[in-house]
Image 1: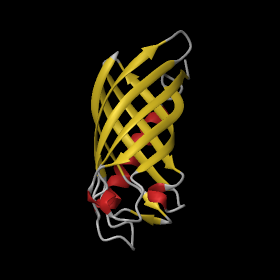
Image 2 (image 1 turned 120 degrees about the horizontal axis):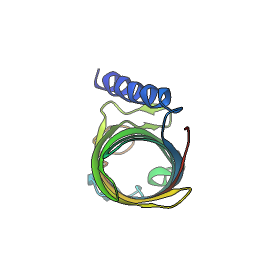
Image 3 (image 1 turned 45 degrees about the vertical axis):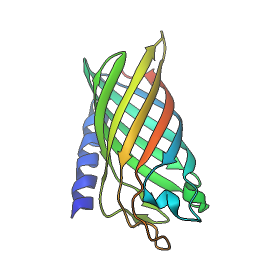
Length: 169
């Protein structure tokens, strides 16, 4: 039930954002370094470091921004399998900002039963035709998405850089 609610919220946010593309917004992408801090990092076969690619759409509502992201970790935990994380954020601020997020994960065709929650802080460097977003986020994530590992605490800290370009009019 929690997964269904999470997917519904993410879907509504995404539909709302896409409906306003003609009015305002920025689209972009970037890279992330993720360090798993939760108890699962102590499992012998788990690699706590990961690199990810991210795609992003951000809608600017003055000091408040809504953002929808999809993160793609090519080799999560040293498994050789991809982890995909759709997520949504509410962000406050302009040059320096902070906010909260919610998302879910799919790994090897299996969806996480519970959503993850995130705290995010960053800076945005605005240029003429693009923005550079540098941020860190802490993700609270408990899931039994791995069948062969005993621990289910996947809390992580992520450092990321994205480039965004304006779209619409």
